[in-house]
Image (tube, rainbow, N blue to C red):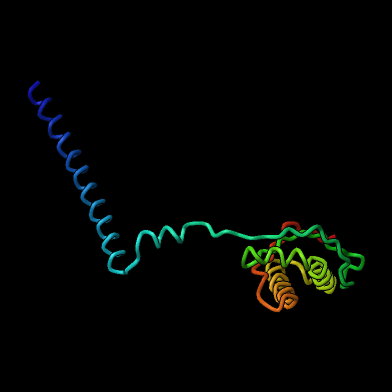
Length: 155
């Protein structure tokens, strides 16, 4: 009986030692991170500001259905829907006022592509960038920040 009690005590001691070591390591890691933040001049509020979501101001455009340029598949068309993200909330009104011009520019640009030219992510990103440049010319200042295709079907 006595030897059995001693074995249980021996088994309990390493467990307490492990817990103490883990706690000390955690304190050292937390202290190191805190020291690194203090030395770098970054405050906790700066870190939290980076994680807060940026307010997005967007205008949804109705469906576009355009004939695509002949290419290898004549008779093809593109059906798409997009959202325009503007730089400031005041710009939403500008976009709404010039929606007809915006749609005209988008339709003409999309009609200039063949089905082969708008396949793949790189092509879509290129189209988005070209549209942003062309649409900002309407406003004569950078109003459009991003364009998101929310629907994109080639047939």
